[in-house]
Image 1: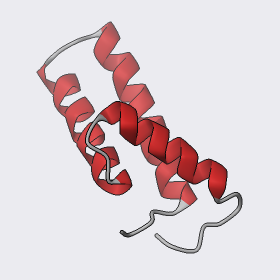
Image 2: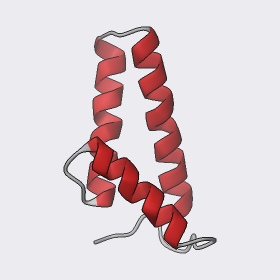
Image 3: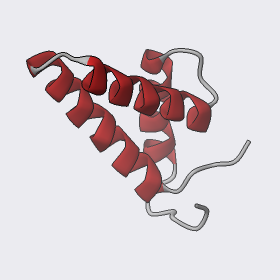
Image 4: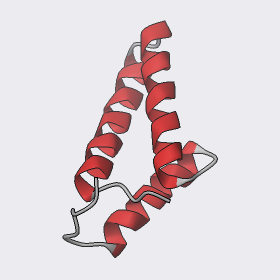
Length: 72
């Protein structure tokens, strides 16, 4: 498994969070597509099957590797 850098994980989690907020405020085809794309990417990067598992896995990766940003 390729392990994403902390920076990539942080940015992806932030983008996912922002997309969820925007989609909840203004649901539409574009916001749904962006949310689906970000969810898929998080799942792939964390080898998870659901977005809930992916977010938890990303959080765990960030917690277990403090300060490590060597691999992108």
